[in-house]
Image 1 (cartoon, rainbow, N blue to C red):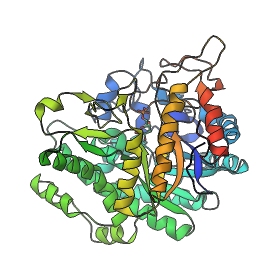
Image 2: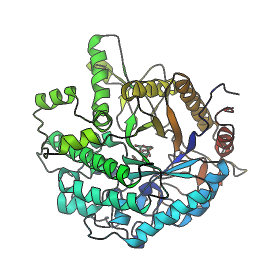
Image 3: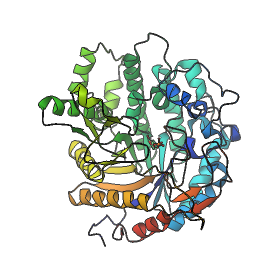
Length: 478
Ligand code: BGP
């Protein structure tokens, strides 16, 4: 038995994203979205970095998002399994291109709106709160081709129209919203985070930060609309978090670690504290970055701050100013990191640091003093179905048990955490690699990296473990 006291109404559940689960990529009137242009294999990474000149799927390439795990047709079966685990909440995203297939359509696509009405009704039928991400890595391709995506100020207006449409449509069904998934990802995977495509010789950093400003203004407009349409709803931001450790007590390393964290905190400082921080203004000046603003931008940012801080936690990071030390890089949720000699890594090289979860939660709560919502955490691993047809994912239970325990410690530290929706409660397409092999789920899906399989679902050992965690409200973690 653990000794942790999770709040009575703690939102235990899971998190998925439209582009990694739904499939049906052109059904029901949906338009092409940026992820529909991401094939598996080595081309994927270059495109995610913004090197792309082909805006329709290429014959012969495999695009995992086109079918994903067919959640579009199977959501009722999957939600029944989530309900069997006792989920209080399910984080989903709405595919922008299901609602506005071209992004700049004058009227929304009713079939798309109806799909999410049906999805939310199914969740509510099972007593599961929808937690909705408005934008999760899926800008409609037409907005990229016609306007250059978020580098263009016009995206603010298109996004505001999209956000107002769904906030109004689902105001009686959705009480938890968040604006941009991992808004800081834009700096690292600009095509994924903001649909940015670069031409030879462009100043990419200038374009990224101008696009970031447009997203930050758009986010404040969504917050404003949410509070006007449904004052009882809560709307948050969403950060890819994970504290950066200094490799040594050398003040240069400590400063470097602080600056690495501030690179991400910048987005949340604006969305939660309502203004550009001084360190960002210094950074812009020293790097010849000029942010074009419109007259009421700063007032919008100031007057429409988020209600809670949503974040993903997979790992902590480490940094050093010593070129020799910097050579020992490891992977991570895109950011990468220096190998931490005190910690293990996943099969994909992601550092495993449960205590870092407690540290990061304290760091965020100290900084923002607003409720936190853990909207992603989990272990991507290779799962094998054994000869008895079972998946004994003890390694995933171990990872999750340790992280949930550290979350309990953070709550005892006084950190106000309102929920935990672990990433990928069902096996889904990996965002970074497009693989099915990198599995996160409590539920196994019969599909491989090449798209073969029956799509059949089956419970893993962790399904029963998580069911017990939820039933006991975090008391039983063994
Ligand atoms: C985050 C995304 C999620 C999810 C997660 C796991 O960046 O918000 O969409 O994909 O990472 O990463 P991956 O799927 O690459 O293993």
